[in-house]
Length: 401
Length: 135
Image (cartoon, rainbow over all chains, first blue to last red; front, top):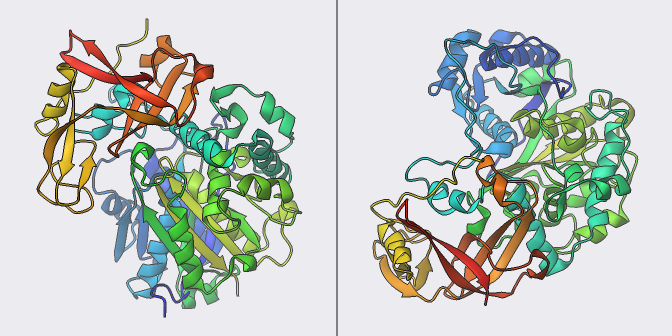
């Protein structure tokens, strides 16, 4: 018997704001964004808000410490489970399994997992925001390994280290720029069937991708995610609340998580990404085969991330991802539906909410709410989260009844 | 004029590494109990948490594990230095090292090529950075 979830917790409501390149919604503090998204997710589920007694969050900009307590107080909810997740782009997927585990342990009945995603917050001249420090996910603090051994050599940000991974991939297995471009083009087709997508109405061809500027060789501009304003959240409930929900429950059947390193320089094997053990765990726990999956929502900060995740999650053999992408139609109407709302590349990456996009993509498909991009008879979804530079990854298997 | 390149500050644990570079010698840690070299400098050996790390001199020779040619600066500090030749070198003794390539035309860079250390002094800051060139 495999340790893990019994599948007794389900996503019963969700919200995902349409991403905006320029914010058109009024400025809101992160705390306020959290509350608004929480309210929308709970009303989507159709359960009373006072049944929510768990919450999962990441950093809240208005406070350095005590984020769960600050949220419990602000929302006025009695919280038996207040969790803080710090896994970058894997935070959303990491939130989902933690919420499911807390529900299965009987700690709580319903858990909110919310990721605000807009930097458009009210401004104060007396308390100006901290200046941009350019270090992003790297730390330039005294004693940080990155400050000492990476930043002085220009190794910071995401583009360069992802490019280094892609370069190594090419040296070992070969690199087909048309195949990685096809990932972006197919996902754009999905975005064009999804009105909320930021690139809805803007088709993209492989040639367009190949004609876009080189940013960090071999990564081109249109293979790199673009930041937007938005936000997303879900409510996860137990069997009783799932039965009361207005929506088809999306059961959390299996998960896996692997945190491998901070900087890929120190990866044990740069080309075997942490999603491999995470996906094995998720499928074994769920008792589901790869061939049972109806839709995949794969974290797509870069096209190379998608390609390597497909290999390492076991949908094709290592080193054959380029061929797999060329051989399959990745659109919602194709034989391997992937990132059916456009993925973050074409739906938009609303900051930390970008990871939740993939959960929402799966929820829309399994609940039959994907509109023109709906995959027929969609019951089983595979979702990944990816934090840092393929440093920390989470896999989820989600299923309808 | 772009802001100054952020330079490293040695810590109590890492000081022997930076002292070595200033002397144009490469010293990294070694864990006798696991028989492995370790980089970056740590208090305990990664993986085993053995408290047996000792400093050993290595020749710094290695191969290019991977690289990218960054056409857009990775931060404003490097705006005057594009394209940046951002590299990961695998030392012959095992660990990998984040660095930059020098004295090479970008079109000649190949994964797997042999590389040699180049010591780059920053006298005002009292530190030396370790870059790499084709061997």
